[in-house]
Image 1 (cartoon, rainbow, N blue to C red):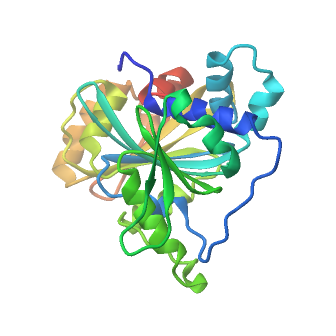
Image 2: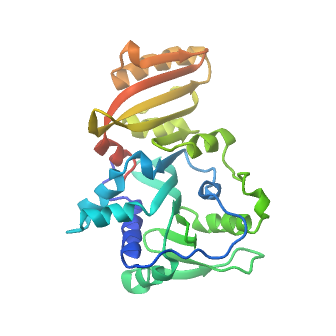
Length: 297
């Protein structure tokens, strides 16, 4: 596991202070087409995660309460309500984790410069996309972050790319709002956007994802892996994990199935083979703290 705290946590703390500093409602900047946060991610990540607010109401609250002294529980709950859904693309090599996140939120833009400023260790710059008259503030400390509008937060890898995407999309005709324009595969987008009551993930480069999840270098010859976490109704401290492995052919499925049974300690009742190359595994119990470490939150 990584020895240092995630940069994502640093940004979350910064957002918390932005929100706490504000006693007013958010004011959205005028714009044309509504931009969907997932449209801003690039296709360079090994796997993608959608974390809706409804999936685990305690997730953000735990981070706030455990890392900010004497914060009232009621205030932590109010802050958590500001975040609707986070879409995160993740890469990891050795002990280095790289992520790119686009977040549906509600952030008071007029208070951001009061918190993310040079006095607090942030380098503030302006970024203007090519052939655009719009200028967007970019805040950089250990990681870059930008708020192209009050409803969207961009942070992590290649923030300028996400701003370019936003600037292009928000100026398209309003009648294009119902169509998603993205570099990501349509199947991946549909799967993540459908996340409502569970944390969903889709690994189109599954090798990296499996290494993080199992701690073992499993080469299973897969096209992709997808699945979701839901809170165990019988134990609030753990998730139930469901996985769907899309193998390259039937031969690889048979070999991979044996390795996965050993890796997860599965019983026959937890697995199901669909067609010739898809293996579904249901009901894997995983402690919530274990998932937080996987996500490096």
